[in-house]
Image (cartoon, rainbow over all chains, first blue to last red; front, side, top):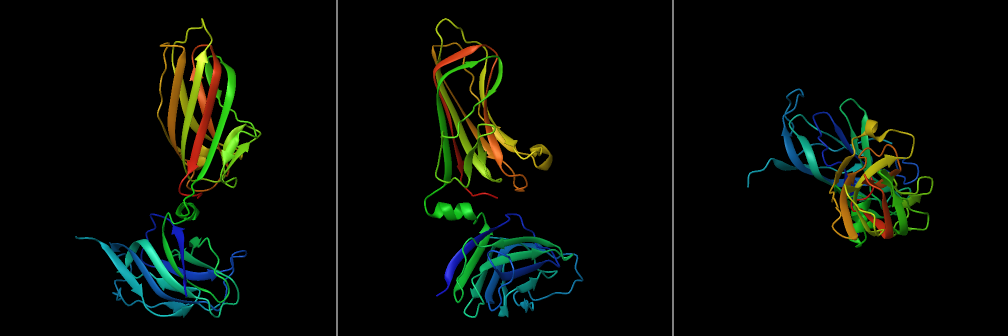
Length: 71
Length: 252
């Protein structure tokens, strides 16, 4: 059974083109990544800021890729 | 209802830390972020955390949960503004608060006088937030945050001494770390002020202050100064002054 948790984040956090959002599992004392944790069911809800100044390549907003970073 | 809000569902499963690159057509100002963390195979206890990195590769912020997930445990985590420590405290019906009061007779000469509180005058439900700065005899708030405060004063003047002019109660935020608060941020201080005249022997004054001490958390702790300003000599007998201060949203 998954434990429901919550955390704060800045109220005005614009994420423009090229920014990276990372979901991490960190050690409470050292802040180091804790291996062996799997992330899924990710979603972001917020205000669409429109097309940015990127290369114009359209990516399916409802089907982006979650990329694992090796540890 | 027309809205510019959208939900971006990031498909896939990945080992943490897992990242999502904001695409050119998906720029977003998030109001809520969600993710499931399966720690069945976790090497140890962990805190789920959201990290934001700029397009230049600079880390902007790390936003972990307050609670730790035990090794082997799993969590469904929601991120949203103001879901910090204070909100968690509020969910249990408790808001960090402090109260201090003094009694006695006090002589106020023309000028500004700062209320002082001894070490034993503070009553608080959270000593990690509020304390008495014994050097300055003022209430100290650890770190920045939103603080609501009220100040009151009751007194009678010595018979035969007329009280004219203004009597002003204010709140102010002072730093105690050797920095100039104003150079780091702009404290927003609103206060109500009541002026008393010689309308009787007893006066009641009160004020209200809304103190946004420091949203950068740069210079903890802060002292909250309550001051009285008068332009006449006043001997306040049977005087009682005190303050309450709340930190409803937690420390920043």
